[in-house]
Image 1: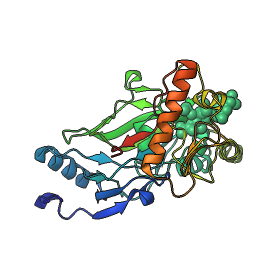
Image 2 (image 1 turned 180 degrees about the vertical axis):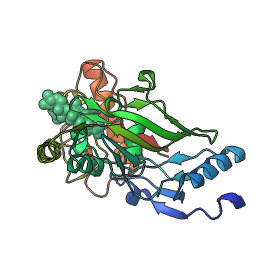
Image 3 (image 1 turned 120 degrees about the vertical axis):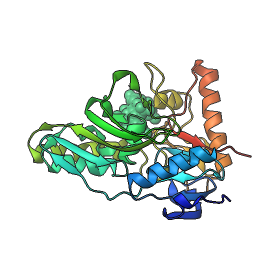
Image 4 (image 1 turned 30 degrees about the vertical axis):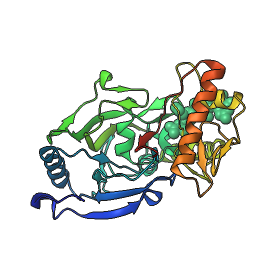
Length: 296
Ligand code: EPU
């Protein structure tokens, strides 16, 4: 375990927490040390300290797009800022630990349209920024007005989005960057109509995706012009199982944990799906989820 410098001693932290509790998928080992800073200053102290000590670190959001394969020794940061929104005319500013689905519902209640697509995308707004989350042909960068983050050198930066900094399920906020929050610019509309669309999108996702089982969302990115789910389905893999990990019979790009799946089983299933799609179609499926650690 680390000997913690004085500067970061007062920052809330917990030790040896199972990733079963920190992720929606529920596989993986232990998070050896989890820091839960309550404000930006604390995050800056952590980032600067880790940099000075030469320690790498990881950022955890809602844990809904994450597959953990082993214990994680590096310090993990999960923001615990007050979950307060700022609404100014057509703009809403949210801290990075605000729930993404909740933000889409809150925007609808305010009579602001533009976030309906996000009604079925779990996780935090910080996670959504980190990967430019999207659904139904829409993605965060289309409504993003400005965003705030900590650079790996510890500097707080607030900026407006540049097209080259965001792509399909990708942003420039790579390892070491900490998303702090963002502002979306929306369009005024009728609150009831917007809320109805939010609810419809939430239900649409629930009816086509296996949300009653533990999952990490779509496991692979859609290859250009293709659907990963359709490819895995057409390769006959729905229901294919390694131990307690299974290719969902409902949506083939979801790999589900029936309850007791181990990291090794899950990893094995991912590799087998990739290799079967590769040998059948010559297409390499790239993980859409983040993968932490290695199976031993
Ligand atoms: N399909 C199949 N079999 C399957 C699953 C899908 O044939 O088992 C077919 C569908 O019939 C459809 C096509 O594949 O014709 C696309 O399927 P779907 O509409 O479910 O969309 P997707 O491309 O698989 C994407 C996002 C989802 C998002 C949905 C809804 C990615 C990798 N996935 O899925 O996002 O919820 O669109 O917009 O971009 C996620 O990010 O975790 C995620 C699940």
